[in-house]
Length: 298
Length: 204
Figure 1 (cartoon, rainbow over the protein chains, first blue to last red):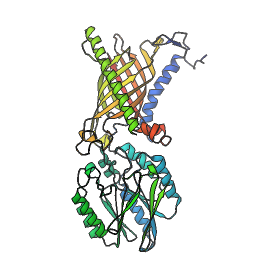
Figure 2: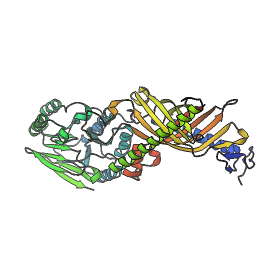
Figure 3: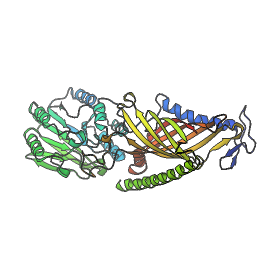
Figure 4: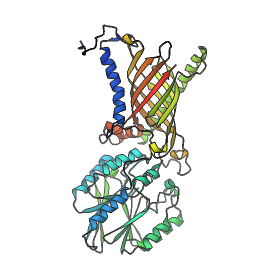
């Protein structure tokens, strides 16, 4: 027997009826109150500042909460460099292709966070499946739990739909480079189909040629010699190999989910790192003259 | 993932076929009643992955048990970062409606459920048929499925058979639901993927 609320009347049997003819007992005021509260609650939940219920206008929106992350991360990396010698050894973490494998990626991040010898993390692209803003946001919420700065190169999935616009807003330019303790790190966008243009090998060669560093590391999402589906022409592959062999000490890619591999372009090691989906991640230790790689599995 | 996509595609296809068949039946009934193909209601909405401003029209079947509507949604640049035009086909089931007999003008649907198929009006957003990628290189993307669960209040317009409804609903993007239910169960919370949509209907 429902207790009538103050100021309301309890309905007699039949006061409220289901469309199908069924009957239920409930006060009118309670019913209307709950009903209005449900609609008003949804509206308030959507409009209240800081609320966690979003009003999503489209899967394809390009507005994101974070802007120019690579630039701010690079500032953090530069700040952390001060007071350290160029020849001091350092270590970086590398992984890519987190896609929707959030739990495994969380484990990789936990491992990186548990070590105190990591200076920064290079993410090798594909933090999304369809390049949607919501996917970028979920991935960012996960990646921001990294205790060390992280920079990201764009992956082919990140560039789908309106993904290139979102990446530009959230991370910045597709091709970028930075120096850290005498090593020149160069990020190269080679998602030719998704970005609608061939990889900018002129930029890559010019950046490497003008570099004053003794050691250069190239990271891009797709292995440039990947001939699957004829993504890159023979000419492009030959050009890439020529640049890599002439200017770089190490080349790193993601994109290969199930396998991590090591091949050589001349004497230059070219690593492909699998996805956290299959437990893959990697650490690279930079000594005074050497680069030692620790390929790991969850 | 392929299995999930195939099952989803088969389910959606079956529902589409059922909807089309029912629409034909409904048109036949309206024609027999001399109403031609006049729609049963017009609707405006905001959010629900369809648009910042959404407008459309639709039909009801089986005493408002099933509503189907065609909607157009628009997102201006200031609201979404880029202009987006979307067509949507929304189908909702209202399992029961409660009448308040002392206020005969008013009724409510405590909960309804439905799903919406989104078709963005931008060929660059589709992977199927795109000349940029080899066939089958990517899983089909572009169209999206949205699950709706909502609550509706209806007022009868005095002196007529028309009525006016206000509704609020949760909208879940299918891609997020697949992650939530299948791909990485336990990582995302339901509130991480719940979004809110609000709308109103005028029912003839």
